[in-house]
Image 1: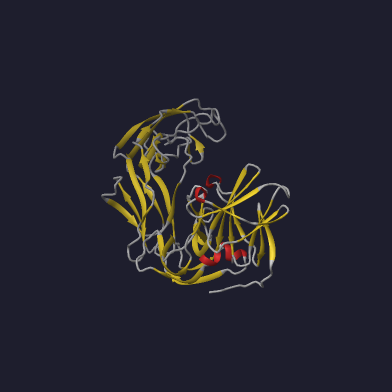
Image 2 (image 1 turned 30 degrees about the vertical axis):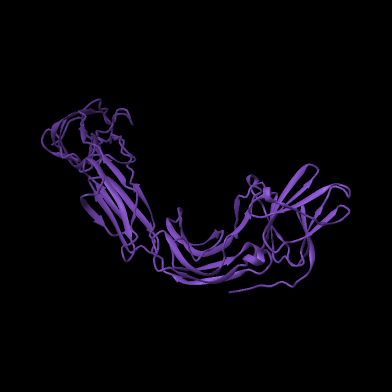
Length: 441
């Protein structure tokens, strides 16, 4: 425990409509809510030798001064201050009291707290035997109870001590996609024998200091706990889909993730310090009643090749399995397959227009295309449906005529495509890249 003391110097301090004479330490004014009916609340360090001072509008202005307890101003009793001209003084009571000052048809209401009767005493804080995931519970020894004021109607008003409890936790950074240490603090109005704060995400000690009044008077007290072993688990996740820009792949509407198969998605998780057990789960059911795949890495990539909806989530827990975490569920939708095959194109006639033979497709997960001339010579072969034939073989555009394709493919929905047909090359213009206008064997 640390104490800071200031030398005693008797001074007079002005605070709103009331002044205080003889105070060694400046009284602290607490702003009262408008609904309380109080003009101000004052906390004085020690009432002995301290007087309240009110300055009237003039030396002859009538002033009436009353005092009331927690029962309210209806039970106020009139008191007699000393008066010298416009200046009226009244010794501070040793008890917490309310005061009414009437002048010029207006009543002003104040509450004065004797801090000496409620002095903060911080002895120790320790961790309670029972803890939970989201809150850290403490046992406290000392004195840091509530301070009270009462409105003119006798309504109880809590005056916050503004005790500060500070500790280390973790904060998530979007740019780095990681957790990093951060210093946090909570403000406590008062402290009883047990209290709690939000559980930190890092191992840390807790420092309790205050209160606002001792701080104002340079006498702040501070106590520190032992090291707390964090058990709370938190994680942030994201899913990034690899984008394809094939102009012949048909779009699939149905969700933010997925579309036309095969669909490659990378899943990432950033976890807090207490996370020991980490697992990504993949299921075909939204309730994850059946897990078809699981991965213990925080980052993994997966290729979705099956038509319909697939669900992915991240789960994590601490060492003793008492603080589980579950991420949002990612829904991946893969559309049904389709394969459309053109039967003609015109390479070399109008550059950039119909100069490449390409299938139009979606959700094709297996593909093999072979193109032959009329004599069965293989001119082109591809296992990627996004790749088309430019009408060339050996670097030269083939002559116009009829060519033949054989396609074997499988869709994400299990549909098998065994296709064969002809391709007509039309509108050929002779150029120097060709040795003749005739097909060659």
